Structure formats: C-alpha cells, structure tokens
Length: 327
Image (cartoon, rainbow, N blue to C red; front, side, top):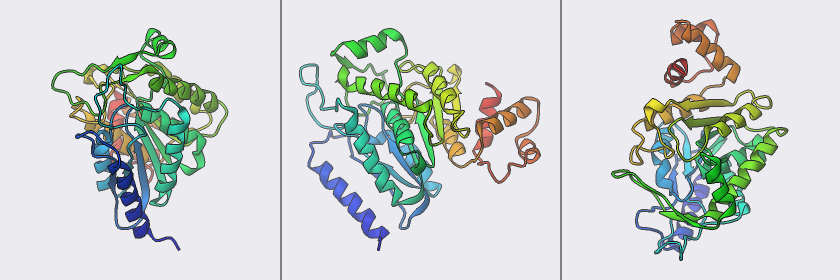
C-alpha cells in the first residue's frame, strides 16, 4: 500500500543525498520541495532555466504552495556544479536531449504520487522541456506553464551561431541584477533545445497535447515571440484550452522573468497569469469573448455573469483580463 509520508521523506532524502555528493556552487541550494503532509489536488513540477538553478522558481513555487499545491523544483542535470568554468573548462551541461527527457519523465512520475493533477512549467530551456513533456505525456498532465520557451533565438544570426559553432558563450548581466547558476556555456549544450523545439513543432501539428499557457514578453532579447505565437496557433486546433499572453514592452520584462532579484519588478504579474490559467477552465475562444466584452466597457464580474462562467474562473483572472483588454 502506498504511504505518502514515507514516499515524500524518501524522495527528499534520496534527492539530497545525490546532490550532496556533488560539489554544488555556494549559491546553489539544490532541488527545492514545498510539500504538505498529505497529497494535494494539484501538484506543480517546475524546471528552472538553462544554466540557472531552482532558486529561480522559488517565488512562484511559494505562491502555488500557499494556494494549496505541492511543489517540486528539481535541479536540472549538470547544473549548479562548482568549478572554475570558462571556455577551456566549460560547465558539465548535457549535450543530448535524452538526458533532459529522461529526467523530465522521472520527475513527472514522482509528481504524480503527490497530487491528483500535475501542472508542469519552466523557463527558457526548462520551458522547452515542459513543452516536450506535455506532448510526450499529454494525458498525465493537467496544465503546462511555458515561460519564454526557447524554441529559437531572438534573430536568425544567433540561431546560426548556435547551430554551427561550438564556441563558448558568456552571459551579460546588467549591474545590480542577480544571476543564478553558470556564467557561460558551450553552444552544443544550448543547441539541443533548438532541436527539441523543432521536434515540438512537428509533433504539435498532429499530436494531442496537454493544455499549455505560453507567456512571452516584447522586451525579451533572448528568444523570439514569433515562434511562441506560431506554437500557440499550431496547438490550438488540437487543444482549445491553450492560452497565449505577451507582456507589453512598456513593462520591460526581460527573459529571466520569474523573480524580482533577476530584474523583473513585475514578477507578481507573471505569477498571477500562471495562477489564473491553472485555476480557470476556459477555452481560448471563451477568453477572447471575455476580452471583447471588457473592451466594450463591461465590468469583469458582469461579463463573467453574462457568460455564466462564475464556476470556471480564477480570482486572478480579473488581473489577466485587464492586461488583455489593453492589448
């Protein structure tokens, strides 16, 4: 017979033992767990960004935990390892898709034991992994939260560099902004996410997918929102509960959008959009109908009542709809 307490204690203990055997960077605290003493209705599984660490998802993890969710934020393979990394000695990041894919499937299996409905999510490369998992294990996933998925770079020249050259690239971080994880990487470590993105587009045309929220920002200089919109349009005929949201350039939300420490003073809006999606049960057509009525001058509550949606919307949706109404 399954024993929840025994399972969660073993999961935390065994994960910590694996990570304690690694020389983790001082600022890396390893995988993060926010767990209740009993299974929850929904459980979140978050994958941090490429070269980053689980700390990146602590704010949204805490928000979902406070809302009654179990939350898992595992340390991605090859990430957070201490060392004097540079072009001659690059960090030990995987260069094969399968390493991440097997990792994703393993953690999905763990998450399924912690709640009735699994929500997966991620940022950048972690978001690409979440998208792949949402196609590979669609029926096992309730919702997916794709924050700035890395499907291609912000311009074609950058994509060419990633695909062709095996050079070392170092991140440029603005003064006063925190940076989690490695300062740089070899291009083959990033290239695999481009390849995974191509596979995602091909599968999205014909395969059933879990409902996905795709979040972009006009100020994102790392990835292109054209690919985000294209993926959304490809998914929508197969999965009408997919949503797409792009933050306006006036908010200046950069690629690392999950935390204030990484420079996003509007990270609470990112969390509100995510919670509104997970806790609502609306098709994109219904969202558009609400947006149109709001733009015509109706109040949020009035529109909800007119469309008989009061049992299917999250309180956070009023914030999201006000953003959409100004789009």
